Length: 78
Image (cartoon, rainbow, N blue to C red):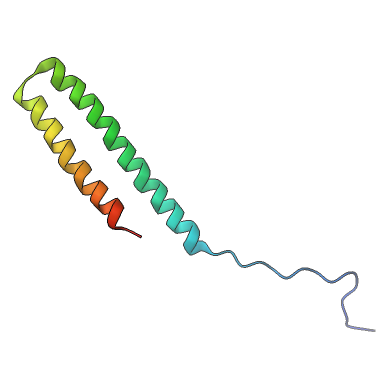
């Protein structure tokens, strides 16, 4: 018997580069966290405008500080 394969030649398997996909997932998660924090800032500002108390203003300040960290991290990554 002839040991050669029967039928047309098959295509070679393709290599999937997981590192590129992982980078996209990390970027997507980072974008989601940043978007969530921006949304939170809007809510906190609306609450601070309504209540006009020191705790509300402090919450806005803390959120802005966190946003500053996230934005700087986003701009310095890659």
